[in-house]
Length: 199
Image 1 (tube, rainbow, N blue to C red):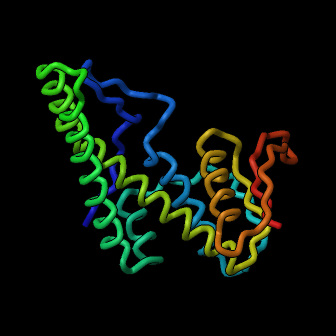
Image 2: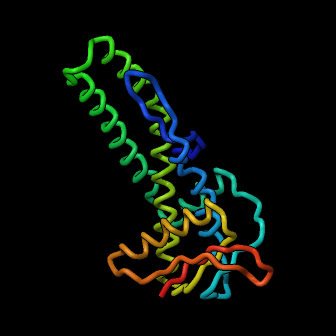
């Protein structure tokens, strides 16, 4: 069973070393939020068209998230493994491209390739986290379309806003796209909330 696990920001790798781009966070942190949203909208027998998720929830464990996603896609593990293999080939291609760089010295090539190999497991795990995240977004999108959900409101913070923005993109680029609007508003207690409206 493939596992989700937090790794950290995106690594930028060269012959000079490894730097971390803090503005490119691991999708793991957004997967935690997306799984909460999925759990919220699909475990409600009232068939609500509007969801306002404004309370603090106990975070889901990595195993719970895995089980939730597995519930929606029985072939999920196989799909993730296939994409993981493609990502491994991508890294191998990067190594071949470094070997072909004529402007680098042999030592420069060797250092760059060692850095790529050193960071391989880190990058593969980040890729797995992103794959699971995008599957979770797709599952939320499918429920929204099936149940004709019209709005989802969340506390305003960077993670909720990021997930709703990704979800907005998925809805607008679906085979049968729907209109959406992402807005920041205040609730009755003057707290900032972010709302995805589906039209």
